[in-house]
Length: 220
Image (cartoon, rainbow, N blue to C red):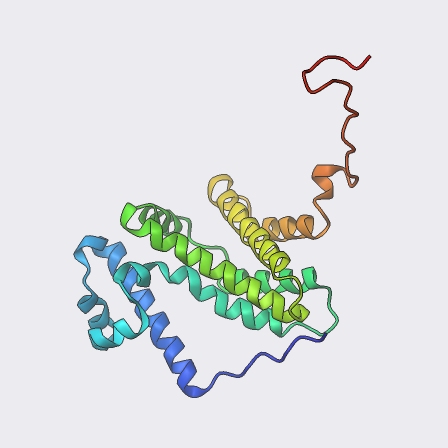
């Protein structure tokens, strides 16, 4: 079944998305500058030029706003995946959509990422941070299902989880080992698509024949 055309955003929808992103970026910026405990919802709203009530239309807390920067990427990824050519193999479509999102801004700034990692490790943000990643995975699974016509949703969730794991592994490798992010991410996605042949040797290992009884005694 061919993928559906990605719906075109109305002007109102674009403005709402831009407002949400502006609030999230302001929340993150102020938190990095002052510390989470020294930032109020009123401060974030004022930074963007809106009321606290408007802030509450988008986020339930300042913690959610700070962590929502993780979720922002899913919007572009969803649109990119649905916009891939009809008939293209699913893994190719997913790979190109993911790489497109992570190539837009080039290699991240290492010092900035270090500050973000330290911030997200704080107990007050950890729960919202995990919720944000779960939201990204859920949207990716739903988009994969739409791309392939709504087949087995359990497998769509598994694929989305695998992709998010590849992104996380590539990102940690970039941060700790200094290797380029995009080539590593592309390699990991290719390995997943091919069944990880480099690790498995391209063949499935057969289990050794059982030569003992349940009590561990030799059958011979």
